[in-house]
Length: 208
Image 1 (cartoon, one colour):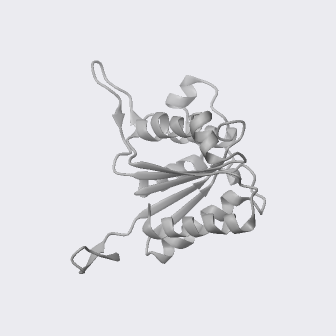
Image 2 (cartoon, one colour):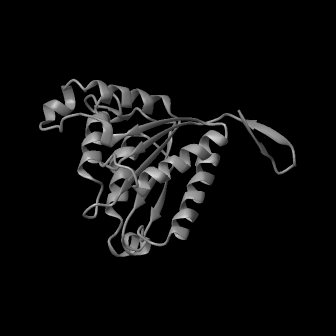
C-alpha cells in the first residue's frame, strides 16, 4: 500500500499498482535511451511501493504471424504465454519504444500481434454481437523516443504510430485511460536526457 495526502490534509491509503513495463527496443545492447527510461520508471515505481515486472521484447524468441489461422488458433510460444500472464497480472502497462521509419519497430509490432490474440485481448463476437474487450480495468502509458522534435511528430506527421497503438490495439482490448510521453531530439544534451529520466522516475513513483 502507498499513502497520499487528501485535500483535507489526512493521509489515506491507496492500493499499489502492478506495473508491466514493455521495452520495445529490438536491440538488447547497452546504451539505448529506451532501456534507461524503462529503468528510471521501474525504479520510481518500486520506490513508490508498486510491484514491477519487465518484458524486454528484444530478448524474446518468437515467430512472426503469417496467416489469420495462426492469429486465431495458433499455439503461442512459451515466452508469449508468459508475457500474456504478466499483462493479465498488471493493472498498468508502460510501453516504451523508439520511432523507426515513422512507426514502432517491426519486432515490437510482431510481439503485439502474438500477444493480443482473440481469447486473450478480445473475444470474437457471436452472431449479432460486438467484440468483447477482455483487458478492461488496466491503464497504460506509451513512451516514444525519436530524433525529430516531438511537436513535429505529433502535429505535422499526425502521430500515427501512437494513435494506432492507443485505438486499434490497447483501446480495442479495453485498456484505458492511455497517456503518452513523446521524447523528441533524443540525441540532445545529457542534461535534457537527465530531465526526462527524472520525469520517468516521477511518473513511475505515481504509477501514471
